[in-house]
Amino acid sequence: MGQVISIDANSPAAKKQVHQLWKAILFGQGCAVTGEKAPLRLYQVRPIDHSYKGVLIGPWYRIPITKRYVEINGTNPFNIRMHPKRFAIEFGSPKNLFIKLCGSILEQGIELPFSDAVMMAIINEPDDAS
Image (cartoon, rainbow, N blue to C red; front, side, top):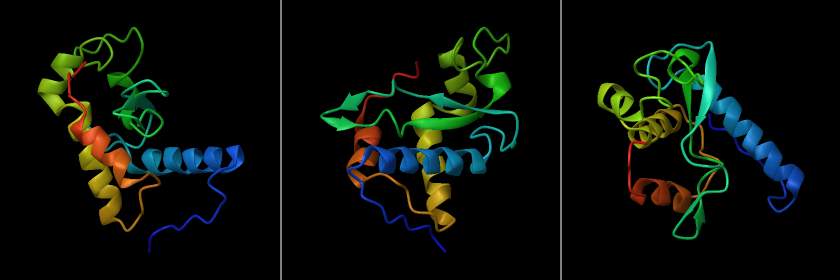
């Protein structure tokens, strides 16, 4: 059913392995907006080193998005990088897409590779849709 990872969580190699698994899980879900499987990019909602109230959320706070909605210098009117507010109005905020995505992953019997504290920090962080 769900994947279980048994590794020494303190080693750098283990952390890299867990993050690679998370990326694979995200890509396996398809675009958070359209469900398309390709071409996808992982949109980093917050910088990789971003913390909220002392909880590191940046490495986990990513959503898979079809390339046309995330391309740097893209011309799509709903490009999340170029027009984040318009994107949020049309498809939902990145936070809501992330929460929905995580719910879908859990429904598939796949455990999230981060703690409840990470999820609560993401939920509680102000959503500026930017």
